[in-house]
Image (cartoon, rainbow, N blue to C red; front, top):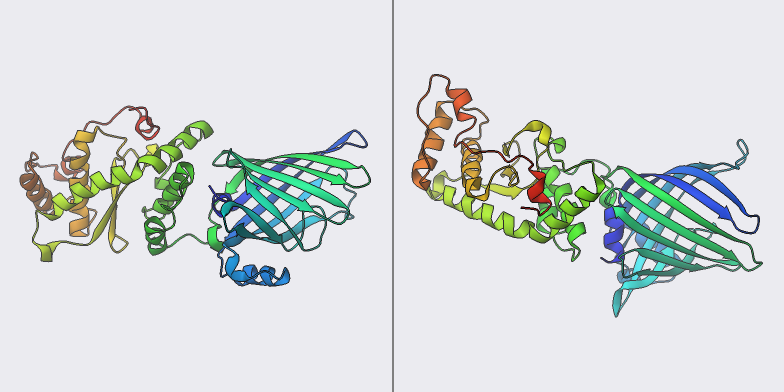
Length: 377
């Protein structure tokens, strides 16, 4: 992971619980704040402005982040202390090593003045910021405990001998602030992200996290994609997806092409197919979003055995082909045609056809779908 990727997975709103130790006085002070992080593209006007402020060629910057905060500390006196502010940070990597370089700031951590420091990614993919001021120096380290929990430690050393050390635990509240877009991604933006940005990170955790973030916007409702509230399990799922999702999607696309082969080219509708864990409360193994163009089929490959994946694809393909969510006679004809063409058992006409076709072709559900997504099966 490089520093810009770290900013991207940090995008969102965070609640920070902070303890500051005033070492000279042997006293500790607690506080809390809300922090918002929004990533900025390299060509963003604020990135260019900060580069010019520090007399750095803007073409050397790879992007940055807008960070704003609002909080309180235990020793505050009413209406006399202000812990509200914002700053822009810009990443300028070293030519020979993008994991370290210059960090340009609109205002510093320890002093409210523009400042240029250094950043580096350590061996644990934590982001370390080093800054020298006229009368002090600071070191900050940011690390992810999980996708939604960050640890931040900082020390400030004053030349007169007074020092402070702080520990913050930051919990994510919201996420969709990446690239300064506070609104939901449109389906087209999500598809663009899947094709370009989310799959270029060399870090499996980041790839998995960004993949699910983009796919979530392609569902009928973003809440239909979910993993688990258990932080360790969600981290394992993100990492597993980052490593294996390309192979899983390649297999699903093989099935999609097989379905296309059952129809003449002029009858084939454009559509995409992707694997993703669907929220267990819905109890479904696949869904088709016909409200976007091209239509999107999402398959929870953790809910059934691999030999049944084709059956799920066939069912959702029939919906996408018809552009309809219903299970009427048109669906009966489409899925019968697909089953006959692909060697699956076709449905039989039934009096309660709607209920019958909802689960055709029939597939046995697995007890714990997340077992697959965590790599245990």
